[in-house]
Image 1 (spheres, rainbow, N blue to C red):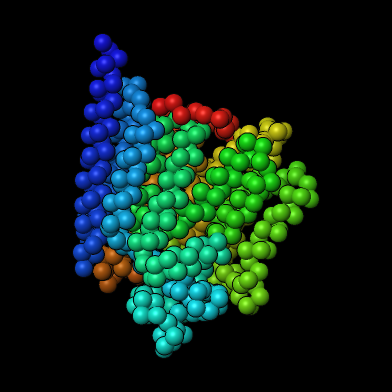
Image 2: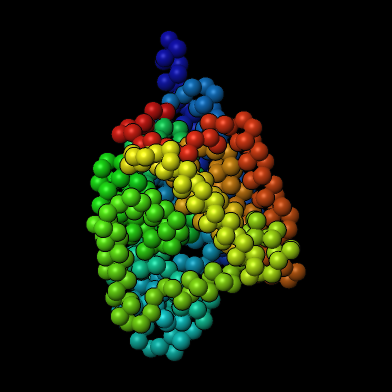
Length: 449
């Protein structure tokens, strides 16, 4: 009898949650398609409601010992992403750069070294590209996006010129592959946290940020390594680095104690990806250098250091701290795991520390952290996925003359930091299982709820 009641409770809880999230994401899609765009207040409210629903389902599952099937997780994940594809980018215009990069790549053979401001009088651009060119931010800077992403942008342009919906379909498809991989190695109630997460839905599909491609390649690399496919794992990890430089902090885990074959494959893979652009004289490295030296948005530790040090020195201190902490953990990991082929380091910690020390914390950067937080969830990681919504309360989105365009309102920033600090304290005091242990062992299947 209890089994029947439990099955009914499972169905009711998850259908109710999926239905509520469908309504919430549909509201977001409706407002995102308005000519005036989604109002900031509506975005924050709907995002908060979605986060509350996902959190509530997780805690109900845990407290009542309910189960959830992969089919339930995946079907709702597909529905949410279809809704987001129907919607439009929310409070972001970066997607215009992706569309223009694809256009320029196809037209000239390389998107690099070309500032969009030099293209305004270029009559060779298609009408679709001219239209998206008018909305480019930072038009005096060439593109910063890695070559793997550029191949994706070029493919999308050839398939459907300057069409953000086609890119959204690609990113949603890649994200569903990542969900499938997560379900192979993590309990499904943890996978649900990612699959239904409002930050993932918003940043990966609604807004179309391409970070999911890099992190999916990186996660696939760890899975391949756990199955003894070390050469293929190195190739995938290298491609992840060529998608976004963030993945470089994980690459040494694939090359440590490996022979010349593995190192040679990494260099060869990067060379083949970059060489068409190097031969034309430009890559993404120029703008990456500018980014590292100058950009500043929504920082945490870096913000505090700026009170006492110059901008340059604060950046150097943050970099030094990260290198020191990364090195200590890397050494400890390999001391504890002499054969690390079937274990994964705490990439949630590594990316988390990286972001905490970074001068720039955009909301979509957490896309790199959250898949690894599925393997061993912490309050900090998932609270941060909610708290980062407050970074959108900027002078630009508030249309405030008293704030710089990309300055986060001090009350929003304070709330964001407070939520993360409180979550970290809760983890340290109550969630020892999530905060202890330096590795996660990848079994062939752990998809119990």
